[in-house]
Amino acid sequence: MNNMSESKVLRMELGEFSYDIVIERGALHRAGELFDLDRKVMIITDDGVPEEYADAVADMAAESTVFTVPQGEMSKDLGWYRAILTKMLKLDFSRLDCVVAVGGGVVGDLAGFVAASYMRGIDFYNIPTTVLSQVDSSIGGKTGVNLNGIKNIVGAFHQPKKVIVDLDLLKSLNTRQVCNGLAEAVKVSLTSDAEMFELFEKGNIRENIDEIVYRSLMVKKNVVEQDEKEQGLRKILNFGHTIGHGIESFERLNGLYHGECVALGMIPMVSGELRPRLVKVLESLHLPTSIELDVDGVFDAMMHDKKGVGDTVTITTVDIPGHFEMKKVSFDELKPLIQIVGK
Ligand SMILES: NC(=O)c1ccc[n+]([C@@H]2O[C@H](COP(=O)([O-])OP(=O)(O)OC[C@H]3O[C@@H](n4cnc5c(N)ncnc54)[C@H](O)[C@@H]3O)[C@@H](O)[C@H]2O)c1
Image (cartoon, rainbow, N blue to C red; front, side, top):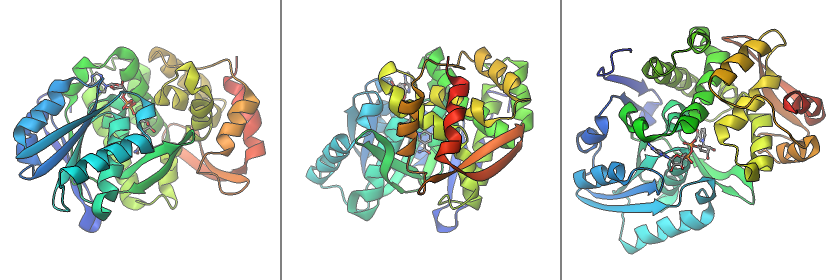
């Protein structure tokens, strides 16, 4: 996958909900060919994404509307969800029309949920424009919004019809956002792809970005195919997220990004032997490895995480790269682990 002009197609095999993930530099400009845009198309983007990306899709569609939400997690809420649905209703969108997301995970989750629920579900296409959304959030069908400060608490499973992963779109993304997304790639390398973890340890990330995106998608695809609705195995994709989400919910005002919180959340979940190696990788990606935090505050936020069932939560731990273990633990057992990343 080092050949930059190479095109790859991964097929997500989910029976009647199967779809292609087209990984190809420049493929944004083939959206008209790859997607069925010969209908009404609601293109959802945010004001931090270069507008020419959404405009390029609009130019290829029969009848398009671009809806731009403000950039940031705050747009993943019921207010914007309602505003977009209202617009679609006004424009007489039917069950045969479609939604296209052009943006990062925020836009993808919001647009996906709009598509999942408008007239009980219409076609959804995704063009992820951040590393995080290219390696992770654009595939797998999880859509949703936040409510009362709790992340992703309202949503639906709704698989896209097709996904275009165009790495050229990352050229406009700043380094902090690139590294933020790479945290999710480090996550899957730890649970499922030891060779990818070695790539991170060797460095030269920019040179290997095509391979990292491809390998991350491969891992996620394999996991989702085995467990679409997160009954078991898919929980490994939440590796680092239990404490990570707690930090994210509590620390949001401090401005940490999702991937940065996941980076912190993974550190207590690896073995003592692996921890210094992981910290080194995260440092090389300029990701945080410790933070001044209020353990009780993070703990309370974590308790609200929807993945908790009663007093217990399923966590994933990693002893050596590529080898994970899942276990149920009580929230009280997790509390001392939060301190590991405290300054
Ligand atoms: N559905 C899932 O399976 C899943 C998985 C992981 C994360 N998520 C969700 O994803 C969200 C985070 O996604 P994210 O990290 O992509 O954040 P994001 O969508 O907020 O994008 C980050 C920033 O980058 C800007 N941006 C996007 N593309 C750009 C580009 N090409 N050039 C320049 N700027 C660009 C955006 O305007 C935004 O300001 C969270 O809400 C998280 O819960 C969902």
